Image (cartoon, rainbow, N blue to C red):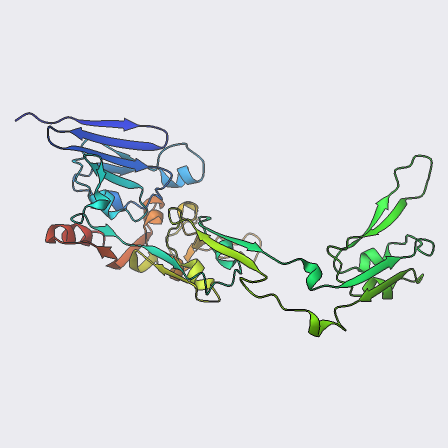
Length: 354
C-alpha cells in the first residue's frame, strides 16, 4: 500500500494542509485573522499536529508571526475544524466543506437580534470588543425639537467674550482679526445655531445688553412632537457574525433585551492570583477584552493580579495559551454542540472539558 503524501502551503496569514487520494481529496484551511489563539484545535488534535505560537508576543506586536502552526503529521480528520468556535478552521472533502456534512459535529455559538425591540441606543456597538456590531441611526433635524432666535447687536457688543465663556453649548465664537492694519483682537462674533439651544444664558450674562434670545420651545412645547423609533428616528442594527465572538457583552448592556447570545461553553475561568506576575500577556490576547488589572490606588504600588469579568468570558482558553507561567485555567462544565452522532466524536469533545 502506497502512503499518500500530505502537502503543506503556508503564507503570512493562512495554512493549508492537503492530501490527494485516488477517490478523495482533502484540504484543511486555517485563517490567522479569524483565529483567536484559543488552542482548542491543539487540545482536540489526535496526532498533536498543531502547535501554538508565542501568543503574548504576537498580540503585543513584539514578534510578527502566526498564532499557530500545523505540521504534516495532520491526518485531516477534521476534528479541529469541528471544534473551532470561530470558523478559523475548515476541512473540505472533494471541494465541499464538512460544515455541510451532518456527520461532522460543531461547537455552536450564535447571536440573534430582534430589530423591532431594538431602541438604536448604540450601547452594543460601544461595548463590542471585535467591532462586530454597527448601529445605523438617522435622527430628525434638531430644529423640530429646538426652536428659537438669537441676535447680537454688534453696535452694543464690546467683544468681551463673557457670553462665549458662559455658553454651556460652546455655540458662541469670537473671530480673530487677521487685518494687519487693525490692532483689534477680534473682527466678529458669531453664533452656531446648529448647537445653540436658546437657553438665554448668554443674554443674562451679557453686561452690555447686546444679546437677545427668544425661545419658542417652552411656549410651544405641547406642539413639538416627540420623535418615535423607526418613524422619525430611523435606523437599524447590523451584526457581522464572522467577527462576533459571542461574549454576550451586547446582550448584557442592551436595555431593550433585543439581543440573545448563545455561548460555546459554560464554566469558569480560574486565576491563581498569588502566582500572577502581571505580565499582561493574557490581557493582550483576550478576544472579549474581559481580562483587566485593577487600577492602582497609590504611587509605586505593586500591580494587582489580573481579574476577569466572568459573565462576558467565553472560556475559549486564549489566555491559558498565552500565560507564560501557567496561572490561568479553564473549567468547562458544558460544551454547546450539535450534530454529535457518534460516541467517538463525543469522546473527542469531552477532552475539551478541563
